Image (cartoon, rainbow, N blue to C red; front, side):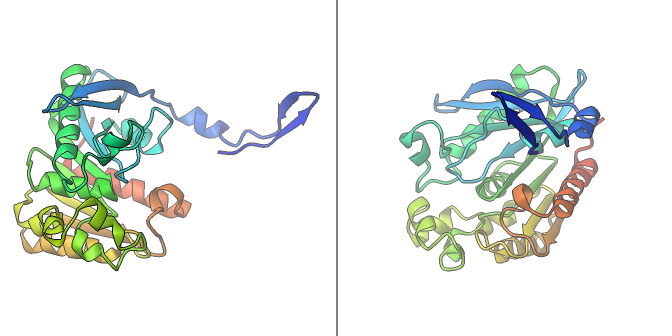
Length: 282
């Protein structure tokens, strides 16, 4: 939150303290840095933000978008909100992420769901084994955009999860071409030919999903069009999966970061309600 100050004589005199009440009512939990080893020996870097108390705490594996983006140790409202609600938040930078060089970023071209899923699962298992108080038998998974993709991909192949949240997901590369404002090049550069796109499409794997899944999207999302979410949710329901859909009117791909304050609050409330029902914390 921005503040106002007066600069005079080389000194700054604060004139406002808008966040005083928020600081008084909340606690910032420091992230714990970890480096895991993936199944092929590749290092996977990330953090755990844990709640207060000895635990054991239910665990949320959170996956960032991009994929050429990254988590850092900076203050992150998502992790702080979930940790305050009693969840240990596990977040890492698998291959495909930014910040570790060109080869690391390009490693998943033509192979979404392979090295990246191996990396995040290896990091989760390392975090559970090395950080006291994490309950590896009570885990959920969630992500947005590309993180929504990888969440949807993983729950079609791995069924350990108490629940999943697929938000603003990149869920079917082939139908992304011509419908997304990112341009036609993205699926072709990242996924490859039409045959490769289909082989890497979570939309074509919904019959393998058994995890309860919450699909969240925004009405005016032009990056990952709303049709991606509607099709994915409908196919889950048709397959008998415990699935729910939440669409925010008037919002776009940036809802969680720069949406209207009321909708951002409603989003957090809906997410926490989902986890309360499917992965309750103490």
